[in-house]
Length: 494
Image (tube, rainbow, N blue to C red; front, side, top):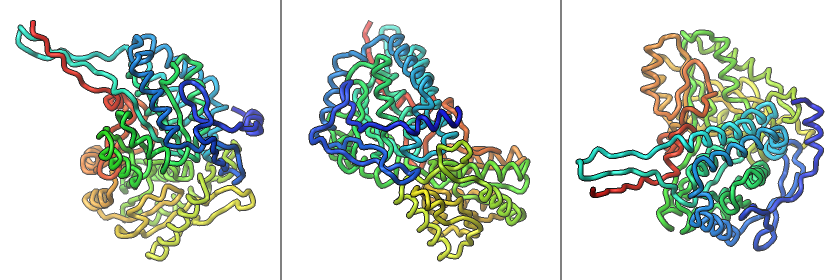
């Protein structure tokens, strides 16, 4: 990766895109389009199809026909595996193109986007491809005159809705295991970050995924997302996004066919620093990256920093120094460490959180302002708010931006209480040299992922999922495959 190659890809025009249905692009029932604004400069980038319920129905019909006729669902495991391996190779071969396209669409800094989006997607498809021919059913322990078999059957048509912050990574976490298990997929990307996933659909067709097996419908969540979730012919829904939308998906399930819904709904993750942390300087450096990279637009971001009282002031000073040292700028510039906030409404919401935190008594140590306004883009300075109380809005609510809430704690018991004092339970972190304490904290923190002496970086071998209002079900690891299969018992009299 070098700057001239990035700049050449940036300069390429992006043609308007339609829906990808049954192996080809379609303009949709009405032909309506929506404008895509780049967060880099606030300027129009291209247009995408503004879908309707009829467009969703067409995609679901294509997916159902493809599933029922067995073109993919009954394809041999080894053949499905080879197709997905080829798709992984195609993604990897065009990684920089995909990364630059995605950055122009959502504003993630290119250094992160190449690794966390394009290369991550290739790794995900390769991981689940390799699992396909290594999974077995079970034989039940029965009497000698009966054979009990437990099959893992594909569920059918999977509806998937993914967010704008890491569309390729999160999309692949859902698409790859669903396809690996023999399902058909109808994917609805965020209306503000659809371009890279439409490109993945093209590559899937090139790799040999049969027509109708993987479809992408773009448009507004209130129209396309609702129609997909209400469809009587979608068997399960998988979703990453806000709690409000997650609740509506559960409602739509009840109003339609009681489809299973697996929801990853974000969090307000506590990153807990004890005074005996092995290296406080390194702890501050990693913790700063854990909240400020990608402008804080990460579901597991360590957005609440809990610091033991006897090191509190020194540690806040150190993490403030790191926040001020980050270079925020054009996300396609290799020198930028932090890119753009995804949209103007997101930026304005971030700034309101800062204003509210100050009104409730928190102290702004750095940041809290819109910056680089001359670019026309959406940029915000990394923000550290100290003295945030448990009852404060900033303590309790997910910002999804570069805003860190810092709160002191006295001892282990108070740290656990504060960590668990929100409705969320997605992730957390603990920094300590005491192994026994680390295990007690892991047991005490109600979260799906707990980091110890690091923050972030968990790979595909372990699951990601939340508890409480952070959702249900798991992405990543072999456990993710469970969502995309139905258990079927065969009870055979011998």
